[in-house]
Length: 227
Picture 1 (cartoon, rainbow, N blue to C red):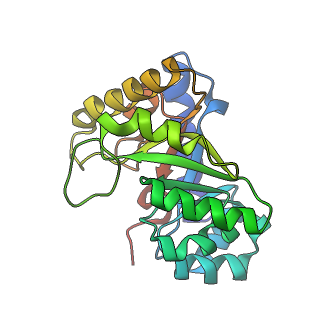
Picture 2 (picture 1 turned 90 degrees about the vertical axis):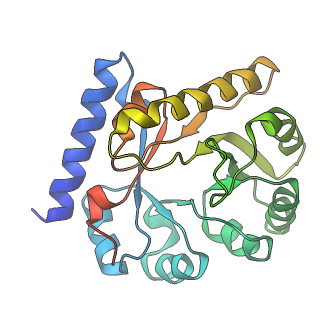
């Protein structure tokens, strides 16, 4: 078995054990293998090993990779910062876009999706720790923004995404995961049905699962350190 095989199996085992320990169905959690800066050959090995969901951060790199591997080879998630002028490529190539944080961007995604007769699945990104270096909507505007995103005919708001600060102790991230759950609860209380919470990465995905994550984005723990 390859290293990727072993890593993938180890992560899946940890997801299952963590979910069961907190009374959750392991099948309710999607493992997204973050394949940015990884070669098509390496990603192909991950797909062969059973990685059915893959996340990319950079449009041009992703387009080249998906063209090589085939769009149907996996469920593709765009998890990087998206500029409006690249929206047409994101819509064409990705099943999910996790990083929608402005109405302007949503409008462009909706426009591009309409052109190809697609309903694009999106997540609303929240800047959960109010970090200046990170994108995302503010927690206070989340409800009004979610309501606006729901109005677009060619968008389907599936949930929320966040990226808390990196901590050497994963427990320190728990407060931020709790905050995202609270925002989801407030949005749901207004009658808007959103399912997913995209939160948790290689070092803190177990804590994220304990707090309700439905999508964990794991890169280095599967593929090794970035090139």
